[in-house]
Length: 467
Image (cartoon, rainbow, N blue to C red; front, side, top):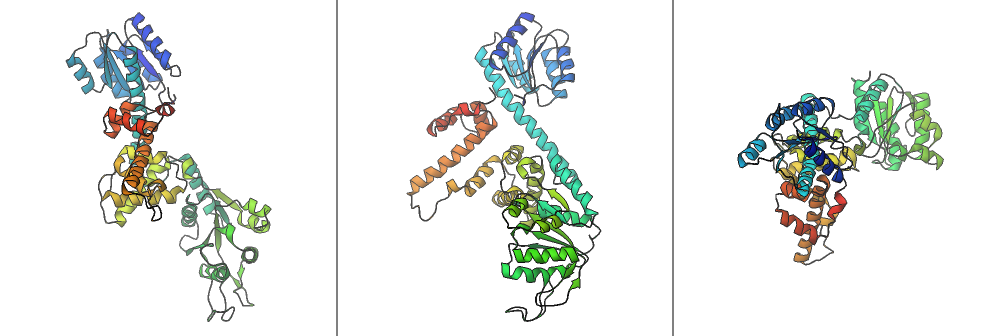
């Protein structure tokens, strides 16, 4: 209900106005509904409150319903105005709709006709408001190139700026793909070491037996295959910064050597008896709970406290949805550039859909999804149809493996049904179960939508959560 903060009913006949309000409250009891007797009363109310729907008589004293319509849309372009009149003519209806009215109902008003019009208006208002919000976010991205709009990530950036000036070790935590390495690189860029080397190493990408050599170096003959002396990353990063990704997965032996380095700021290559002073700042990243690993005996507590001098937690993408329009636009622009394409546009319904997805793989998953959209778009504007094609290609329910050996007809039906179910349930969710709105958005006849819903045994009532 909070999506439509207020319904206003306006009519100069007090008996009719009270009757309309009673009818509306009988169906939309959770909405805030207010009645006013004049156009000026509506405008005064809109100065104080945000309204989603206005139901107004076409003929009123002081200000006509048509004049009121124009003034109201100037104040709030997203509001849905339903015009009522006892003097219905085709000309009046066309004029009202041309000027931006959402619907037009003749008096005497039929209850079900009014309910249907208000339900449609509610769904439209929510979509229009969300699309306007997304448009503003994308404009902001185009203006300053920022990839973050959420308060959560602005706080992370502020914290990163604060720790950048210090020389202490930083521990950055967060789910896989949430952007920990990006924040680590930002810290380096804002630090006093920004003009010196930045090296990053994924501790799980290097075989366990070679990781210590990679970090600390070795001398010739230190182990089988060590045919010459080799500097490790620590020495190569002197005066700079090292990002140690997946720090929770390093072995006990490596933990001991890393702890000693943090204590002494000296590196002893494998097989050498000589230590070398190195000036390096470490930024450690992990998607694991190191305190849990300590309790399980898998991570040294003393190393944890050496690493966790300064800490930053990067929230998952699903907890900062305001960033998704920015990031999706950024990744789409990046992918278009990689593919040699011009800037690719997206429908705002597409941005809204992408923003509603959970993104359990976080920023990395979103980036890969936008790359797929860019490839399948062929450089053309991305619409909802392409979203469903790409999601179908990536969904397990749509895959046919060599071991299934289904008949072509059966396999095709399964994929089509899977696509149809997801497509319609997404639209039903978006429109709160409004079949007319689903028909309008999908381009299908209302009867066709109802037939598909019946065939797939989709319960529309599950989506009518607003009412």
